[in-house]
Image 1 (spheres, each protein chain N blue to C red):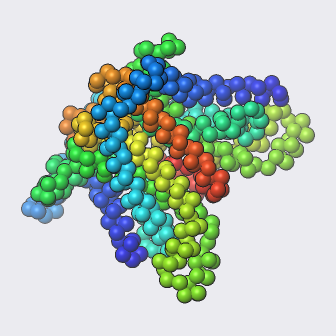
Image 2 (cartoon, rainbow over the protein chains, first blue to last red; image 1 turned 90 degrees about the vertical axis):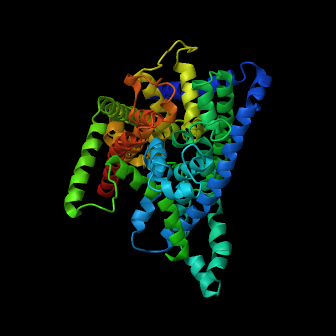
Image 3 (cartoon, each protein chain N blue to C red; image 1 turned 120 degrees about the horizontal axis):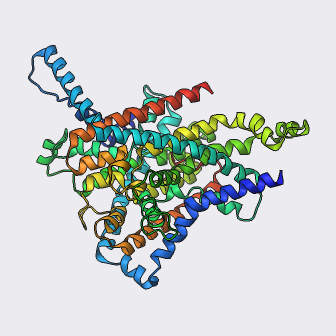
Length: 271
Length: 268
């Protein structure tokens, strides 16, 4: 029995070491391989900074919108019955269930010059292919479900007793939301927002299809990392950008862990 | 649903429903023309569209890419199903220094942007590998990347179920003289099966659509071109209709998998 335990432990540690440990250690070593100064120089050069800036701007658009939509939709799903509720619920999972590449292709076929609505949108001067607008749409699409999926289990768990009590006491719907419902789901909302931020900053495939990879215009940080490696052969730039995103994801994981300790109903479910 | 509901539906239409509808209609080359000769026109047009769809999907490159994605995803989901149970077991039942740390490491592939995984995996298992393992432009390189990104699905599906299992029946089996392995296979595994299958389904779906983590290690040669990579190549050459056709086929495959999972969930 003891020998089984040791064998299993060794196999698991070896597997995780090869798959996760080695790459992470290696990334840190490579990014700082020429010293911290070289890393900092790469991170603060013009193209890297403008990519970081675009990523942050896109996140600043996509995260609030998807948070409001997620909270609203969660309330509808957990507190109301309506025709087509299951279909409504399923639509939220579509963008993360299918390939990001396909999300990019479908946005182009709907809203670019060659797409369904290309002609009327072009008359307004709008186009999604090779523009920041397309990058924003792609990002909004792939980060759609996280707030909703974080809140619904908590809403179901806490039930409606307190909301009913507040209504009996004469509170209006908005007041009930701000004073009763929101305080009890605040950790779940924060959890969902954290997941949304992580996905928004890291999205690659969907953005790559619509962006056309124009430096300074449609190049987000993930695209910059790809471009540095694949087109410009600036390996250190690529590692440095990758390390910045990796550090952000470690921060994200830590926040999620803290939130899970506060609210046990929260899951690690990113799917 | 009220005004808020209507706004949400409008938003969903803009960022999900209309694009998917546009994708499928381009895939089948359905064009909505105002003129036309009634029913006969439609029958002709739709059948013509299906032929272009079929030729795009059955082109040698497309067929090979879809086949590669299917078998790789299946293999990856299967390997991680086994490793997922092993890892979950160690995390739940074993006690050693650093176990909590290990537990939080499992989520890293979720939180790490896929292109970061792609860069790092290529750096360590590519042509300049510091450990002299070169998997650049091989299916093993793709497999490694897919094992990385799907690992959390496999572990996290099984882990909570394993943690909630009652230890009494295992103790009983052991008291009756069953060995550790026998106890695992005839007492523990039967109650884990549904969660293992669920993890398999999630990992499979994720692997079949994955692009970022494999985009660099694949290198762009035909033998490592997966379905999503193939679609990306088509878009880079502005072959949007072909891209739409292959995407539609892939969407059908993925949603078949999602429906199968939902059906399976109802059976359990």
